[in-house]
Length: 408
Image (cartoon, rainbow, N blue to C red; front, side):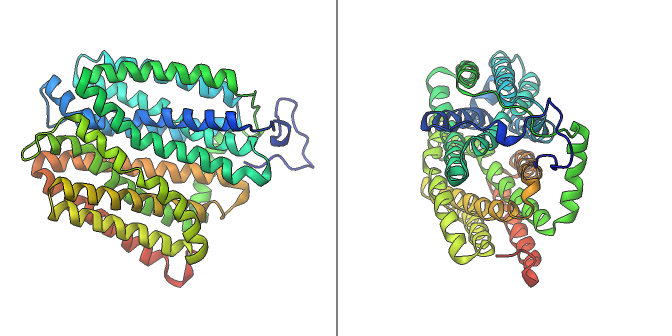
């Protein structure tokens, strides 16, 4: 978000970005990365536990809606909470969201029914949006020459949180039950809030625009930039199939011939750590070969993953597919995000809001479709959905890349 033009007086209650700058120490950068990872992990704790939750409530056909509710809550939070980062002190905002997250996860732990847990999960997703506030904080506090590194470190923390969340929740669920996992998540959220309150400086508002004006301007940005529309559609497809796979993996592993518990489902998150390496590799590769090539490689990996999932329903096939799926998602995301953030330097926060909104809306739709596919056709129906959506993303990229519509 840009500062008001120099010809327009800046109200006393608006703090320009350069006036809020503070040295970003290695300690504070680590805190931001760890807190971002701990916050985003709440979106994925339930996935390896779905079989246990379904057994507790006696409703295996509808348990997937817990993942849907979490993703929808996160999407709503992105749209309506992220713009507040330019209007209020982000230190207070992140602490308030951490408190809300603690309450929501505690409510999940105490849920008496599947419906109650789905409602609580909606608020878990909404409050977990604090993750997306920490990346701009790192960028604002870092000096110009170290801004890229700062953002990269926080993003690595987010990836680690996404992937390790399933391993942690699966192990805790297997040993002590799924409710203990959500009690633990509530305690962790309290620790995150207290840590951010102690570590962050005051971060004043950056603009005098109204909240409604910020929201209203995003539609114009989406209409103006064709590459942004393409990136949003492509990454929504990628995250839809990513969420579809993880939403039903625990249910698949609980059935014959596997007969495995939530700990094994969660352990697949360790396999997925390849995505962190892909994020670093992708940044270097797109500089050499171009962003369009990076998206093609990412989408091709996603297509190959679901071909393997369908052809080889075994631990070997699942591991190979997860490696390809996580690599492909990270590669496509780094390529797309690198491209869109160069479209308009004065509107990067709003462009990122649109992009992340599209991603998690796709994730929510993917989780919903996977739940329906699983109930009606099992694993093979889920694989068919994933392959179809991956091919759709590939077709969108091929069409929108014609004539260099998306610049390399």
